[in-house]
Length: 274
Image (cartoon, rainbow, N blue to C red; front, side, top):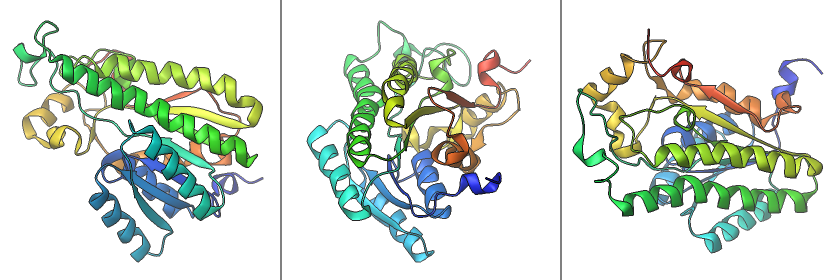
């Protein structure tokens, strides 16, 4: 098969969590633009429906569903409705996540008192772990269930982070173990599901401009702080994630499972620009 033919996903279907904006929307756009039918799920149903309608208006196959990734009963219902609509599920992005709040270092320099471990709000810890780790588990669990029942090869892609590998001190502490947990869960499930021809991989972004945390990376002070430490000298726009998402979703990566694909401008090489 020729190289470009291996990226063809026409006629397949994908489901994306956290797809109303940011990286999740980027994944959904990539799948739709490459010819797959896609369900955009998000707790923000108005945003998901707006973006699904925009994609349909552009000639793509897209639908929306409301989903809180910690609600397992609704998760099962949403996945079953996707299968009923498209006749199966080929690709699943376990992407939904939240910002954990500020870390122990302030973007403008110095220490942030609220981000210290002895001052950090325990409820914020619980919520970050519930959505960023357990929510990914819930998504991958449902994807595995319906893909195994369908009896066809499938691709599950989780959104991890370079914060699962290196410390980013201006990012809240629970984000780090949550994303490290996602990475190891991907390793485990890749081994378990290989027998069923279901591949499991993760994308580990560094700093990207999204709406997470109220769009704090769009703040000029925060953005300058990140630009100053990224080896490539800048934080990235989400469109730069599309080729990698398509690679992992398509047959181009059909011998790739249990992998974590870094896309972080070199941050994980040492966490700062030399």
